[in-house]
Image (cartoon, rainbow, N blue to C red; front, side, top):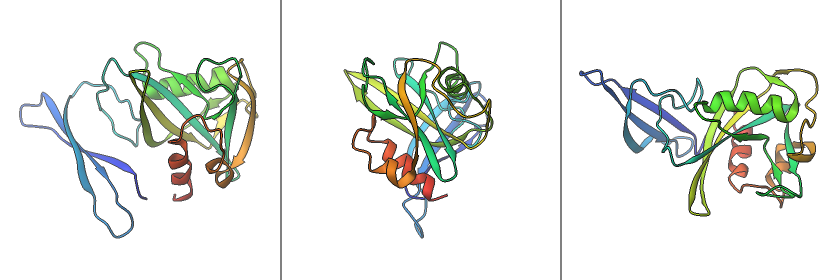
Length: 193
């Protein structure tokens, strides 16, 4: 699917560092092309999930947020951010939140689903992350998907969102008040699987 990132790594002979290549597909019939090469320590914890780009180092100054798109019956769950929120008030957003110190993106995603919606998520799928600059700060939104969870129907557990709603992917893609423009690309990728 266009825009899908994947990774390949090779352990050098000295065993101290991995070399990682990130690839992006251009679309059907196109080959992969290398978009970035970086070196990462072999002991770096995964920030991208089991199917994603394991071992990628993230700039320690970068703010990181994990989001989970819950999916059922060809619909996705979004939350309308409360009007008193400091960021994106009154906008539809994918539930999630900031990584706590020492926490991986996957751990934050699981914790946030429990805190915000009262559900325990099973396996996480991985989508291309969303990166942006705001107020002179780099922000990386780790994007995950989940189709199975325990704890019943997701319900608002705190004041982060004023309401939640299940949207078709088509409906979500055309919402005018989405918190992040990058969500549209993530939502569109869900229809390509």
